[in-house]
Length: 285
Image (tube, rainbow, N blue to C red; front, side):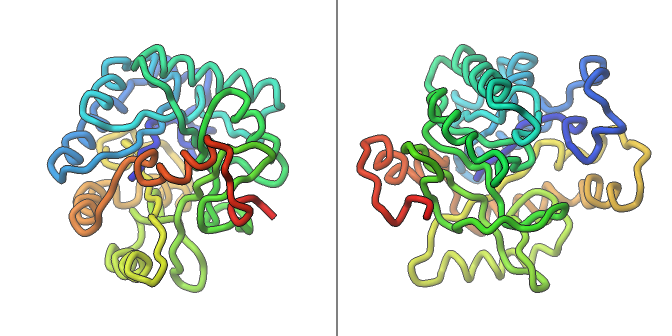
């Protein structure tokens, strides 16, 4: 289970309606919604990984410490939701190192994981993995084979080593729906019928040689009272669709499946890479 901790106005689908230069003047709603997620996870006795923006941690440091106090993992979502493929290597380095420092100073423990905003690592910026390892990250979860707004990237479904070092990439799981792959989380989970995902996930976890699945959501997805921007119908559907139903749908997923922190679920993979004993099958071909 993973949560990308960001504000509603950080969504790239709303970047024209909420430009960066007005972010500091907008109400912060992530604390309230994230606390609700924390309560839900407590209710179902689930531990999660929270990928937190550095700017959110600066604004709500007590919230980030609360995550750790309740037994969850805190990981990095970058500093302020810039797409990784829009950044030059030096800028990316500064972004992810600053975010890591903010989080570690806030919680007092090592931050191992990273997730790029909008899954924005791909062939054009594969160098990002070398930078991540240089900064001290142990794993990334920044790739997803199913997206609404771009062609699929051909990537392995299981964890693999994407670069020269030992940092491991743990891609977000996708499931087949209507002859294409959709992520197990986010907008696709919120917008499509729960029965589709329950059936697909059930088949995946019960299949021979099944691997752990990666699910993600955002705090703003359980906040139907968030401000509504004037957008076209497609964007309105993608961002605001089923916000009022998401909490109940998420509760069903929490009840129907077993979930854990990424650093625990993939402990063997992360430890193997950290010990420099990486099998050839895990390395990118």
